[in-house]
Length: 68
Image (cartoon, rainbow, N blue to C red; front, top):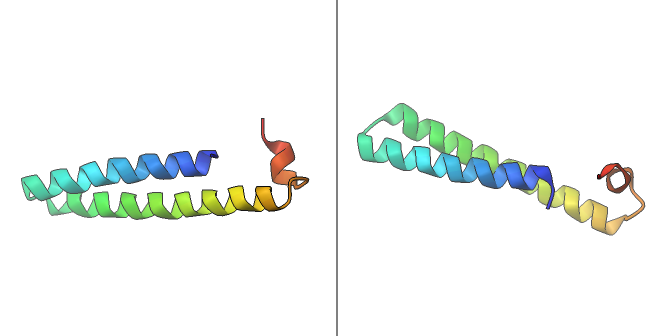
């Protein structure tokens, strides 16, 4: 798991909480912000997954060597 996948998961969780809070309180802006953050998290997680698969497919890649 890389930082993109971790950040993506975190954004999805926080976005879900914001969306739910907006729904419960009737705050449309908070609900929309939550949906946007969830979407951002899904995209970031997908990018992280692609990055992980690329490293697995080519273990000698530059991305693999730059990992701590």
